[in-house]
Image 1 (cartoon, chains in turn blue, purple):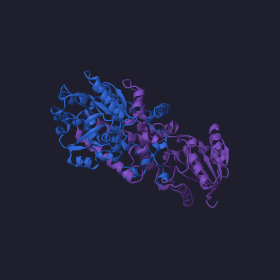
Image 2: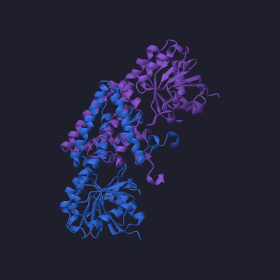
Image 3: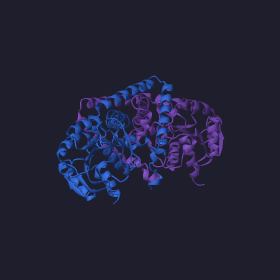
Image 4: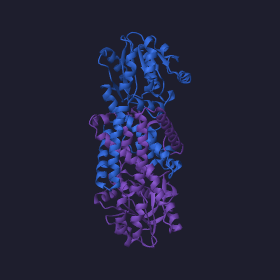
Length: 309
Length: 309
């Protein structure tokens, strides 16, 4: 039990991210007690069946009592409400962090409630899958993934070091940046791709000339790649759109501008422009594979029909 | 050798698709002779090193002599030129087919050259990966994948049956539709996804506020999914854009219209509209998985860091 970093960790929200953290804490023995809290009695019961913690309560206020580390893993739109509920009950010296995909909005929602004697350190582990809920979590989700902190100017270095140590135990690599930059970076690497994926799947769903069953039947020729992101949690992504509005609208404007250029090149038969873009994008794929951020296996290494049998 | 379907098969073009066909023919023993032809002497030599055929020539005209089945696997923009070169040398009764991703244009380019005593049957196997060239091919690429024929009205049923039998040996399921419908279906399930993927990767490449190294570093949060399609062969995709212009422009217009609606919902904070779309798209993913057209494993079953080690 020498790996214990905190006596009591409280997890508020126990979906894909919260439950993966819980599994890692348990497997690595990082806390004596793990208190789990979520608003839904049903989800809480499922967490208990999965033995994700040592204690369970639907009350966030109740949950944070005596906690040395509180990790809030809820849709970003619920951050303010959680902060308001837990603030009066936080232990002096406790570290409070979150895992939200937008940072400026989470800080604006949570910071005003945070007592002076508590260390509020906003964080964002860049990890996940298209699945959601407590059953979707697994140990090792954060291994070799980035976790970005966006600390406030007054942040205590010792507390920051302890939180960093926690995520490093989970296998993450840590980065720090200011919240506004985080929100711009995530708008392009994560939010725009999800929005575009949702959009194209919606477009395909609405066609009259091509039936939905044809779209499904022939989806392996490209379309299916987008349906993975478009199967992500609707509540989470609604909140991301509403809470990173400015950066997302900026990226959408750039995307649409570029698409208009491409569309015009298609209309006017400008093969050279198309070829130039289509060649340039290949290089980025290569860099991503070289950086170890994706596999080089064709088709993401999806099992071929052979292997399925 | 009882599986022989044709005495001599000629493959014109020996990239990902052509070389996968060659590998299957060889493994299954479907022809006595396999003549391989490609314009590039270098690629032809590589095909020979890989022992993909039984004879090799850079001359398409030379290649088709005495062939019972000719499969043209070149970028769709080159179809007309190939047809013109091979037409005078085709054996009476030969079957000529192709694998192009657009069908109306291929027919318009090739049909005028085809002699009356030859069976020209346009086809399109919906299979491939983001890789290209003779080394990228593999046996079994077409297994459990759809192959769409778009036969001309006068097509001989016996010849059609023979070609169908060939693709079925390769494991494909066969569909038939008219070329215009094919081009619309493919515009949404394949061409639009590729164009959107190329576009978003291009947008990310051009940002000033977020560096390219940040995009690469954090790409696992969604962006990397698009880079796979955007790494596809530039020549092939330039030609697809130029040769399925009308259907692609229609799908692009619908996509942009839907995106404007989504963008407006984000700007005005209309969470209900976002939630509705984000929930609806989940259903399509489920249907695709149920139809056996994609894996249900999170992240397409990409190896996790654990499995990589």
